[in-house]
Amino acid sequence: MATVYHGRPIEPYRLGVLIDLPDHPGLSDCWPDAIRLACEEVKARGLLERDVEVVVREVYAQPWSSAHGLIKTYRELVEDEGVLGVAGPFTSDNCLALLPEIERLKVPTATICGSVRFVGDYAYAFANGGLADEPAVMAAWLRANGHRRIAVLRERTQIGEEYAEFFRYELVNHGLTITAEPPVYPATSVEELVEALTVCRESNPDALVYLGLGGVNQWVRPALEQLDWDPPRIQTTAFVSATYSEERARRLEGWVGVDQYDERNEVFAQVRKRFAERFGYDYATSGLSTGYDIGHAFALALGRMRIATPTALRDALDTLRRIPACTGGPGTIITLGPSDHRAYKGADFLVLRRAHDGTTSFEGVAPVTPWEQPK
Image (cartoon, rainbow, N blue to C red; front, top):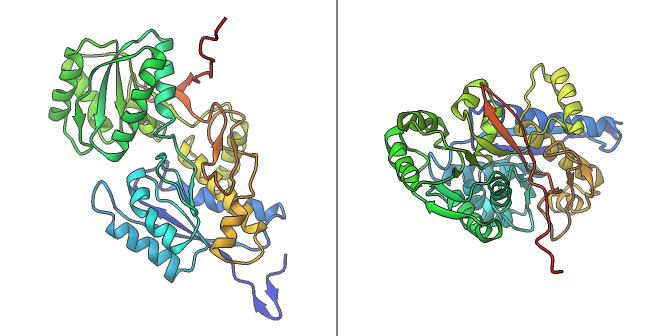
């Protein structure tokens, strides 16, 4: 396509990337590259007339600091860098803090946060999990494996509380009972975690459930070993870090967790090959898959808009239907609309994996089964 119009260069479209979890190999490093690859490939397919420049900013926000720096950085991307859309931040607490600013500035912002409260005219959720969806998947696994009495280790955060709300909704549906629910803060220690896990163990549960973002995962193995306790256990998409490295997988030895990397998804398998050829490294992680999916959606929408404004980009995003997704099980699709900004659709957009011996393997899916029908 032409790069000059009436003797003047045609400028690239600009997308912002706002990373609030720096220094997370398997997520923060590959996310911008995955977005770049998706944009390059959409242009090569003839569906996008301009190049896309990706402007990356990283900031430590919650839980390390307040959201002040995050909001300031977002404003800089929009007002100083002139981006048409933003990918990020990652976490629900930071996304909720940023939501009023997203709606005020009217710039389409696509994140991987899982909160059902991240809703707005310009807010898009390519949820790396789902605080309302994961509890049902976990409850189905517990029931299928005969676990009825459940001890819950819950984070004292927005994320932990939202998970717990929806987990409680599943108790009656799956015949589960909570035996203990000690709250913990993500910034904890082995000693504090041992105290909470002792409360859990003494409640005599069939299984242990962890509801949180993953702050305790670096301490949970030594805490369980100190207690000499090895219960059946399952956690939220805090588990996705187990796919990032052997070290992180060993931290979660014996855990089952909700994830969105599924080696059966041929869309992602092919994207990974092209990503490795383009950038010289590779990850089998939902960090890479969600980055590509968001970049793909933005690039398709950039090609469909007819005036280069954030609102026109939003309107174009709302036209996307049945886009094959890298993220989730086979058959997961991306569909958006004016009143539906939750991207992933399909029964198996969430899967289960198990950590063992420094790696993870596919555990299964939570099948959608009907309730007992009247005769």
